[in-house]
Length: 340
Image (cartoon, rainbow, N blue to C red; front, side, top):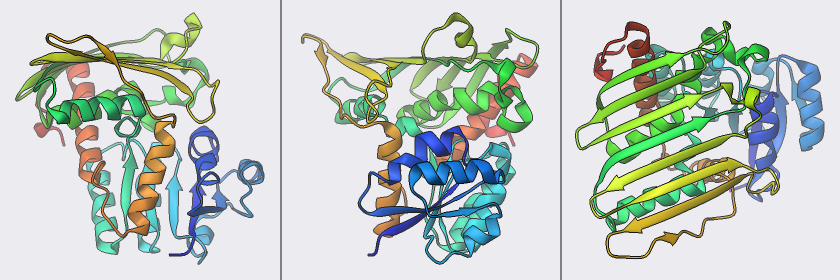
């Protein structure tokens, strides 16, 4: 198969710095064009990433015969429209998480890509992050038995007072944009959730920037918290995960580094097993964004449905995130299956 032509949809931070540069490091892809409604931003990103074409109208990019797949990195309210238009044009779609802001749009996206017979994946990066993926492999191996309890925390440098992220109509707020990372990971480990109880708080008037959730699964209990307020304390991005299993456990510690462009996070994974010494796993020196993009590209080239992160998985993560927000708003326990 010829080199896969990629169209980058969105020249903001996620597209220009987290997704776009990965394609230039892959032999099997070529970033051929950048689209953004802000033509100046599109031109600057295209120049930096050596893409020869710039578009400010999405229909022009979708008519380009050199574009085989699009990587959608725009604010969440436009995920649905752009995914469906891309599918109708016969382009394969990688879409940044979350899949959408509501389940109706998510269902329309899944239906449109199925009808068009194009590959569609939502970029839930923890499923590809070296530390979290290695932890999943330990669990799947059965070495330390079935998982029973999980604790997760995710703290970001984002300051809501100077960011459009504070607008819940654009991002869904901290629950749908940030908390969803750990919610999706819990689903990957434990399956579908039965109920959730959440609390939230704000440190500034512009928006809710902290949420914590207690989740009940058929065979486990999980707790997660997510916060956007940590830039004010000058702390780096960090995330942590502790898993208690029948015969041991796993601890994950992640902190922003950026010293190594191929691995911008410092990650440690410790595995504990009853009657054994703790061991520190050796992790791949490649970040999760690179691995998820490589996986999507391989699915397209091999004409395979993404199995590590199916569209239905992204829908379930959104449904659970919506349930946490509803629980926090109503101060009640919510069954995610009853969220529509």
